[in-house]
Amino acid sequence: MVIYACSSNPGKLKEFALAARQFAGSDIVIEPLPGLQQISAPPENGASFEENAAAKAIYYSRFTRELVFADDSGLEIDALHGEPGVHSAYYAGPRATDEQNNLLVLERMREVVNRRARFVCVIAIARQGELLGSVRGAAEGEILQAPRGSNGFGYDPLFFFPPLARSFAELTPEEKFEVSHRGQAVRAMIQWLRDNPSGSHSSPVPIR
Image 1: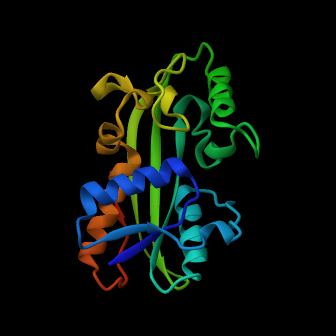
Image 2 (image 1 turned 180 degrees about the horizontal axis):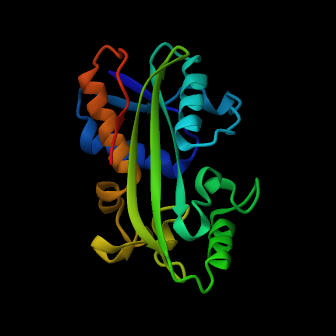
Image 3 (image 1 turned 90 degrees about the vertical axis):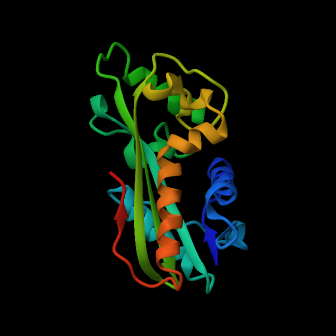
């Protein structure tokens, strides 16, 4: 079974490739959607990760007969009322870099005592314009006072994961994927595919 990943984010694609090696096995192949670079990206104006992931999966599924999946993910900080949330990728502006986004988070968290936060990932699965199912993963942690580590991408240097006493950017790719929001969601997606080998309808399979 082939399922196409609909993302141009190199960090995400590396993690999806890792998932294919570690969890998918020979029965499921995860590959980038052919010709993705030539397809105009759809707007991401949903009010939730679920809405954005579903909209992207449905949109890209019209460019192939195979199953596709799209994810929407981001950082939720309790003290910022859930920000940056669905705006995580462009929190500091439409062309913001990871460093700029991280600096804005640190500025807004200056002298804030409650550092609790979580990474969330929702993956939606679709075929030929129809949403078939969705899965969700979340990793609980805290926002550091300063970046730590050089691995990962996005907000990983700011996200401290207490069970391992390191930031996500201090973990190896394998360590991170074992505990991360995206790792949880991808493993749930693979299970969904095994439970629905024909790509038939299924109720969403949330991870709590």
